[in-house]
Length: 95
Image (cartoon, rainbow, N blue to C red):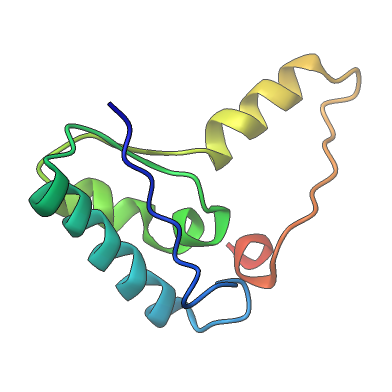
């Protein structure tokens, strides 16, 4: 089973202060655990992952993974020069 939460009410996150995004991510992650019984959480929002992933990993009682690091590692492996171009929000790039 898959439960998806898209925060369309506060989107986009990229131009919001990091503390606000961190709070949104924690609120949504805890909702997934408490209300939906999530056994694992994937933070697929790059901005949320860049500012909140570490705290979510530390605070939640379930495994939490992001998409930035695995994606970047996979891209570097397939490049010829180990350089990858990135398009992202201010929050993600600043991280």
